[in-house]
Image (cartoon, rainbow, N blue to C red; front, top):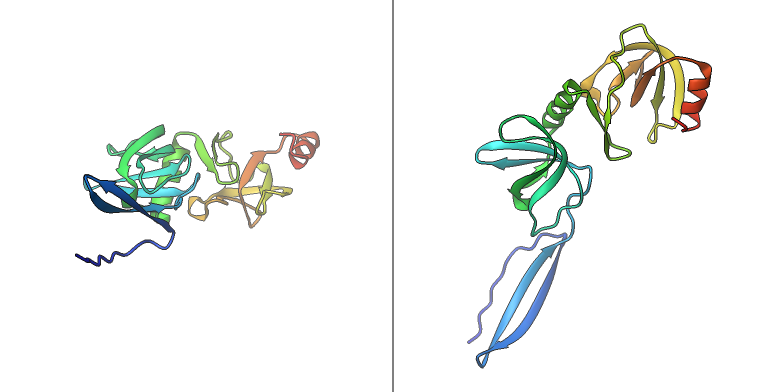
Length: 190
C-alpha cells in the first residue's frame, strides 16, 4: 500500500528520513529538526497561559527545546527575574516588539541594570546622570568613538543608544572625572 503524506517544513529545518524494520514491517520515520532560530542575546516574547513572558535569551534555542534560559526577563507574575528558565515551547516564541523590548529595558533600568547588546551581558547602571553633567559618551557600532560633552538626558525609546549628549545618541555615558579617566576609557582599559 502506497501512501503519500505532505507536510510543510520550515525553511531553516533539516529533514531526516529513517527506515527501520520492526516485527517484519518496514517503518519510515521522518524527523524535522530546526537549526537554531534564536541566538543568545535575542529578546523574545512567549505567550503562556494567556500572559506574556519577555526575556533576553541566554544561550541558543533549538526546535525541540521546552523552555529557554533568560539572562533577564519579565515572568508570568509581571516581575523582573534574572537567570531564569521560561517553561514555554520554542514554537510559541517570537521576537519581541519594540514596545515589549522597551518595557523590559525600563524594568531593568528601574532595577539599576542595563542590557549591553555588544557583550551580551547585563551591566550595572552608573550613578544617575543629570542634565548638564559633563560626561564621556561612547557611540558607534562597537562603541569605538568617545567624546566629552554635556548630558542631555536618557531616552529609553532609542535603545541601544539611550543617552543623548550634545545632540548625539550614545550607547554609554559616564560622569567625567579626569582626562586620565577619558584616556583609559578610550583605550578600553575601563
